[in-house]
Image (tube, rainbow, N blue to C red; front, side, top):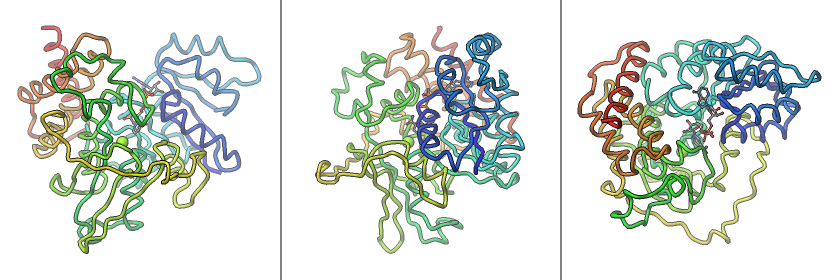
Length: 388
Ligand code: NAD
Ligand code: MG
């Protein structure tokens, strides 16, 4: 029996995780569920999964949750970041699903890593912003880190078990596939005027709003290039992005002998979630069999860096090193939320990230305190630029 904490239980990844867990009551027990504000969703989840603790984002949400609970299912209710870190590192917990969106997930993910939990990482922003420091904490805490992002989960599956390093294993490059999002073929001159609804209408995946906008700008793929760098130790020249509109091949690994190993499946996050939950075993996820006859063809295109300047920015930030990725991630989070609030145009997301990076690119980030400081300063610069 594995005991699991789900950080971000009310989100798209959190709900898919609970859907897999519900299929295996003999294997998984839920210790804690966390959410920022969706008390209504938590109130549906609590009687089904019977967590010991539930964490929300504010005292108000905690009061609301307490008021909605019935006496048969009364978990301990807590709120705030310290409580998130506590349920991520609790001695009762074996496995933590890190599925909070954005920088807010870094502290609890680190808390889990530091005490050696098995950490299932969906929250790519946490790794992008803290990079080497996060991976150091994984080593020092003897944590095991399993990628949930479908591309990285695919690469993990295509690498040898217990991979010692890409060169030693004969890997030439990693090929991250990308759907190209909803604007892959849209006339570029019309992009400035697209709405949040259009940007969030992803052709293949149903996801949270922030990652949906990131997919439309392809900043998501940029963040994933940086994520792959830290997870697998690959340099920017060994990570290529391939647009593959069907989203059936989730990524590939090319070896020096010319072999290319791919992982395929329907675009449904329950596959990587089930893979990581059960690793190294395999369990049912609820995902339908892949129907290759219905798919009929697989297409590939080179990404157009002019159409998707955010992808180029992410490669530049990775090459620049230091605090560049932290700044890029922070500026992007501010830009995306302003876009979703209709205070910033779609193409201004890339412009804003570019201008913040030009003004602020700290050469060195040597502690987690530095990471949080750089993140805060980059957000302030981005907000000021939007309000100007
Ligand atoms: P979502 O918006 O659907 O859910 C986010 C979750 O985080 C919610 O439970 C919310 O309550 C919680 N949350 C938000 N802000 C918080 C805060 N300040 N403090 C505490 N909790 C907070 O997002 P999602 O699509 O599930 O994505 C979650 C993470 O997984 C992101 O980092 C995303 O990039 C990554 N990811 C998602 C998918 C996908 O298919 N949805 C695929 C790959 C990676
Ligand atoms: Mg992905």
